[in-house]
Amino acid sequence: MKKNNKNLYLVILCIVALVFLILTVFLHVNKQQNTLRVSINKPITTLDISKAVNHNDLTVLLNTEEGLYRLNKDNIPQKALAKKVQVYDNGTKWIITLRKAYWNNGQRITANDFVYSWRRTNTLPNAPYAYLFKNIKNATSVQNGRLSTDKLGIHALNREKIELLLNEPQNNLKQLLCFPTFFPQKKSMVYRNQHDYGLSASKQLYSGPFLVKKWKGLNSVFLLQKNKDYWDASNVHLKYIKYIVSPDSRKSMSLFDNNKLDIMSLKGAQNIEYKDDKDYKNYAGYDLGYLQVNLHSKKINNNMDLVNGLATSINKKKLTDFVMHGQYKSANRIIPNKLQKNNGPKFIYNFNVAKQNIQKANIQKIKLKLLFTSDYFNENEARFIQYELNRLPNVSVDLKEESLPNYLTDLYNGNYDLALKQKIPTFFDPNALLNKSINTYQIPLFWFAKYGGGPSLQKNRVKGLIYHPIGINWDYKNVRLNN
Image (tube, rainbow, N blue to C red; front, side, top):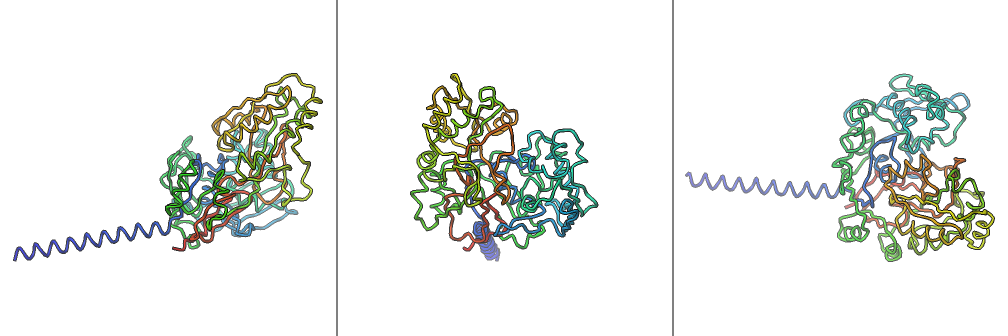
């Protein structure tokens, strides 16, 4: 009898173990089937809405946070956290009523979360997109320290109502409010974490479709997980997005070929090699890569003949066709023809004209410092531009590569002669690409969509992916995976 009981016990134990194994395999397969796998070339650096500047950071914020509006698949702003919008005083006063929505910790998203976020961004010295607030009443004076933050043209009328005051009517305000810099932030979260705010997944609250998981600063793999507290969670179909940081495009290709990636960007010669592949996609982009000239540099000193010499000395077609392997389009104007016909002066390569301009500049031998960061330009691209400029008579150019924070600080302080930069148009207005500063001059080099845009490989199972050619490219909210 005891022997029979023992045998029965072993049978039951085996059945339980088998069921557990089957369940584990099922859950693993189910998780894989509901996980979008994306490669990026660099790790994200911050989840701080006020400080985020590069494409990877902003893309994660677009998919984990929510603003008053969100662009749909046709790039038309749709109400998101805004439930009702009333416009008064010829378009200079907006009253926005918030929908009932919650942070991922269960706390209500309030008008004060927007007020605090906007005030914080307008008082941080290095907030990269603070200039976007310039049409908000008193924003410039608040940024310059001439007025206190409570004078900024955003106020909480009650828990659910926001009052926006503008200097003048602004047709593209709704598009602008889709950009992460205008999203809400929770004051208590910022104060609690101080300098650590936004530097790991747990040091941020989330109002959008997904939450960041398993990220502590420089992880090579991290996750976005569906946010069950998101107001529109029923339209979020993915359970996870798995980000794989892979600077080596050959490694990404191996992962893609072995069915461990769904989306990857093609780099260099891969664009030519995979152009006829069934998974090949080419996403248009209107981000601008350009050379910025510091007109107030002692060596430049507002010498426009020198600037024109620099502007006409770079063979941009050679840069895009050979150094960049045809990934991007050379740019002779600040605004592309597809966006606007009357798009400003041309900057055509002509080395003879460049030498004539240098002769007119009447300069002795000068040594210029060319600043760049690998977050925007790789070393081969920077060295090609250095080589082109060094061909000019009496001009010598030294490269200075910096980390992104140091690069931004030097730009802010004017500690450079030349800088390689990118500009991300934040809304569908061609003039967003134009230079608004009297202290700098922009020489266009190429059009690109550095993160994910441009040539890519994408598995056929990915459906519902929204790509925006201007602003932050990728919106994963409505993605479905057909397995």
